[in-house]
Length: 251
Ligand SMILES: NC(=O)c1ccc[n+]([C@@H]2O[C@H](COP(=O)([O-])OP(=O)(O)OC[C@H]3O[C@@H](n4cnc5c(N)ncnc54)[C@H](OP(=O)(O)O)[C@@H]3O)[C@@H](O)[C@H]2O)c1
Image 1 (tube, rainbow, N blue to C red):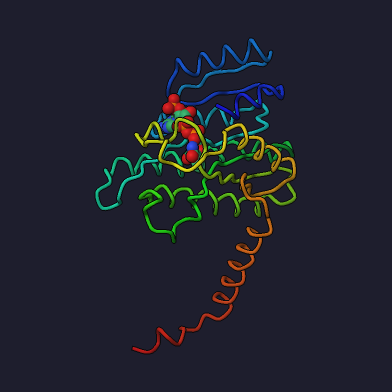
Image 2: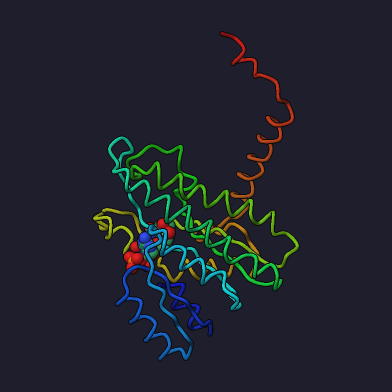
């Protein structure tokens, strides 16, 4: 909702996508009235294949879509050995399938027009995999799906070099929204959270700066550069020397 509020304030016409129709209608009416923009409602459950196709058709339609924001998400935190397989499916549908399919629908037109952008909302949990659960939640599927969004967007940025179309992956930490409440988590026990408005300010500012990875609370961006450099070094080291490492050769 914070992206919609901010973009309406900046004069963007909007297509609002989510499941709760009433809520979307109220938001569309309020933003159109107060900000003088056009806000269409596209009610869709992104775990539903027909609904996803409907949103995909809109994202890929001829009208000049300037910005696609893949922001929908839910936590689904549960220990993996007892998680309901339907929750796994839904996490993959919303955080992976929808993000990839909607990007695929929107990008050809943007590339043709030589302008446009996609923002994919991941999470700091994307880079948390090596930390045990507690105090962080049990999150194998959620963190894995958010890591997909990170790798997907970084690789996509490389493919789009020279097109004047930009992609961004945003990695917020804790944000004060309905996210944890919807999952039944007692938010009074959580550390302080950033406001959704600050996340959006960071994300849009990063987009203007053409930063591919936006970490709203990271004061020193050099830190993330060091992580990326270390990954590239490791990748090159292993890929350039495809010889069985000595420690594995010894049985
Ligand atoms: N809050 C945090 O601490 C935090 C931290 C890092 C990253 N994130 C990420 O930030 C993004 C936004 O989350 P939020 O914090 O704003 O949570 P939120 O307040 O719960 O909002 C989630 C939004 O996604 C929509 N949505 C959920 N499931 C959907 C589905 N199956 N189909 C269509 N729309 C769906 C919801 O609308 P309906 O329910 O009406 O469908 C709602 O508009 C998510 O991707 C989340 O993973 C959140």
